[in-house]
Amino acid sequence: MQTNKIQIYSHKDLVVWQKGIDLAIVIYNLTSKFPSEEKFGLTAQMRRAVVSISSNIAEGRSRSTRKDFAQFLHIALGSVSELETQLEIAKRLEYGEKVDYNGAVATLQEVSKMLVTIIASLKAKT
Image (tube, rainbow, N blue to C red; front, top):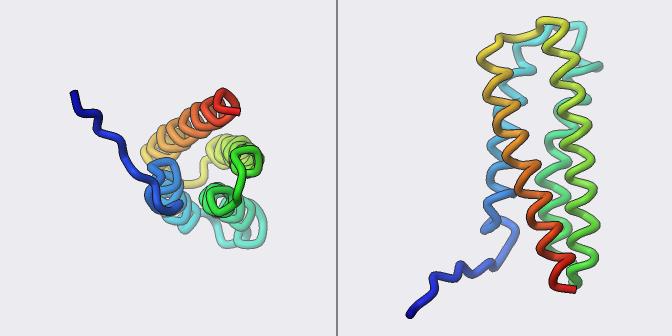
């Protein structure tokens, strides 16, 4: 019996990193529709948080130990929570469209679940 094991050569091979990049595109598109007075407020915060997710996944993947990788995944998970809060604020302020929020929230939840799963897997292997 042959198992289909996927080789991970770089952070770009990680589905969670790829989904994080997809989420960044969604957030950039969503925030481009925010009022101009939010350019240095909520727009900037949301964009920094979403970029931080994939950036920390990439940086953690380049570290030499599972413990270090898990630490950076925890930081990425913190950015997920930060972005979730900011999305809720923007939604309540009625910036953007409901459809945009649904896609952003769905992708954010997917990334969150993936991060939690990978962190648990790394902890189980140590």
